[in-house]
Length: 426
Image 1 (tube, rainbow, N blue to C red):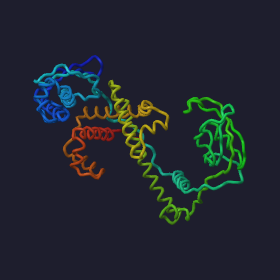
Image 2 (cartoon, one colour; image 1 turned 30 degrees about the vertical axis):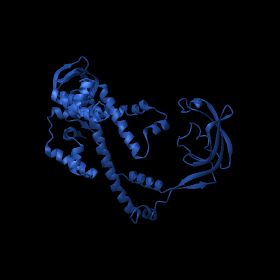
Image 3 (cartoon, rainbow, N blue to C red; image 1 turned 135 degrees about the horizontal axis):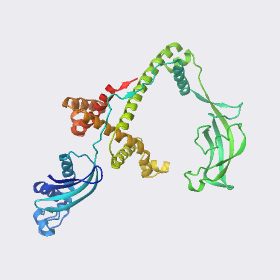
Image 4 (tube, one colour; image 1 turned 180 degrees about the vertical axis):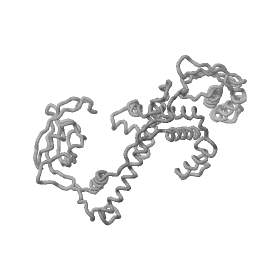
């Protein structure tokens, strides 16, 4: 395989390659296709699946296996040609065979490639680190969270419903005096103030008492998922059966014994101070990383192909699909439930995709300008970490993750570490 011609096109980051696949490589591919297809080819005088390749080519033409053999050759041939020119392919826009014979074949391909970006002043970035002081207020907030987790719902009989209560209601909805499908329920538990129902619905239950029957009036949003209800005025008839409120435990030594292995409130507060201190330190460190990442993206200079953002969004959707599957769900059911199509789902990840692409390009640019290298020791260390994380044998990890790909990841990690070490943290 050899690159015959590489032409830079007028569009940024676009090239046309003319690639030649030699006769020996092409013949091996043809033979591979022949072995797959011979089982289903009938040739008079031979048992099915036993006809020699030459007999099939004589009967159906010498080019009978060419198309499939070329398809088999394209990926590796294109990869090698791009590698020869030090180009990273982002997207294949078009590909066509030019000529093919027993001596090999030639194809022409138009590609979009990863750009070569520029950056200045990326060492010495100034960032501000968040305070990690553990105050009494922060400790009290942690205690309130624990109280909330250990709360219980109790029935309230001596007052009207208010926000944060759970109202147990029957309801039925009407538009123009006619009940509509899906607008009725009995003994429904609705947390007031949650915003789960139509705007105005929960607010009009506040102030009512148990056993009251009343009506409320609302307007369905213009973007409501049910087409026949969009923008419509509706009346809901309500019966309030029960009001439940959250009861929080008292904060004392008994509470501490229930929620921890400490004996007294003072001991528990000391433990919480350590927990809060660690959380603040982690949050401050992440915030520094985020500030550095944002500064690097701002400093990036160059034109980024839209295809890079598109590819990254596709990858994020695939990751989301895998998470859904791990929970026993599937993408189609999720989209149907959320009332969205594949384009809308992909659009959700557009901003995140752009950030990931820009940050990766920024770090690759730093690595290139700082001549950052990845050693065998670096790779061995990373393979070891992955093997430990996934509870796999190192050799299996190496077989699954190509060294070339891992080296690129390690290189950008080194670039980020360098930028962070040189950053001015106030």
